[in-house]
Length: 62
Image 1 (cartoon, rainbow, N blue to C red):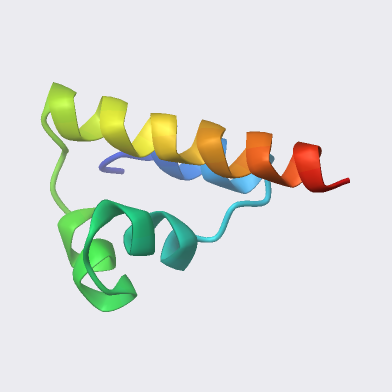
Image 2 (tube, rainbow, N blue to C red; image 1 turned 135 degrees about the horizontal axis):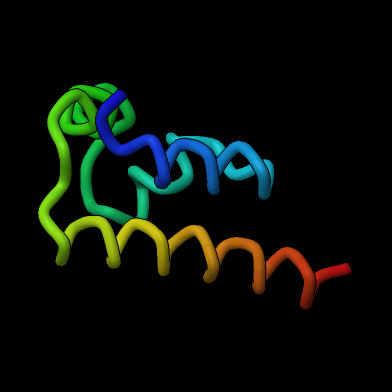
């Protein structure tokens, strides 16, 4: 499966793909389509850092 690491990390941390998409700069439908093909290293690192940012913000609110 393409972008399996990204999908797994999002699932483990309870981050929705639409949340990542919003910060990635596209709507959730387009982001889901982008996930069908493997991301470049730059895109993958950006998406993974977005997941980390979302988790950090949630922890700060709690």
